[in-house]
Length: 185
Image (cartoon, rainbow, N blue to C red; front, side):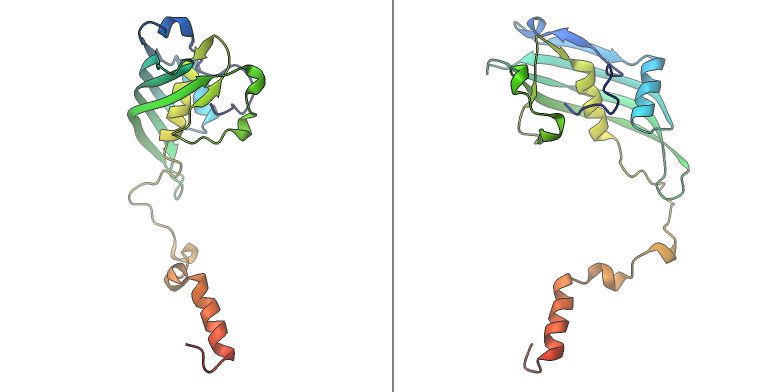
């Protein structure tokens, strides 16, 4: 799981004992309170977070201490356009799934060392699992990192010359090579 910036309790903590998912998957609905939405809004630099709800299934896989979190997420956010800084109303929703493996806490890597490969299970320690923070991680990956109004245009002065944008750096080297050698292609 991605580490939080402030190192305190997660903004949307919903911790469940893993024994609850041993026999059959645990099904929960997570809905953020107004205070939790405000904290998530701050964490992700949003202008507003009007709704945040997830229907989640936490299940144990047949691989021992491997657990799968899957479900659907619905959030209503306001972000700022990266071009005009005007507010944009967005709906963030969709299915998600992640796999987690329980390991001895002494074997856990530092958060910066976790590769984040989607095919690799993420490590966690303990006898309980924070489903809320897992959902927040999925929300983070669904947010548009560069929200832009459809009509927002970048000023001409800030655009790269189109020829520069499509020119390969190797083309420049080829020109230099050809300038000094009349037999070069």
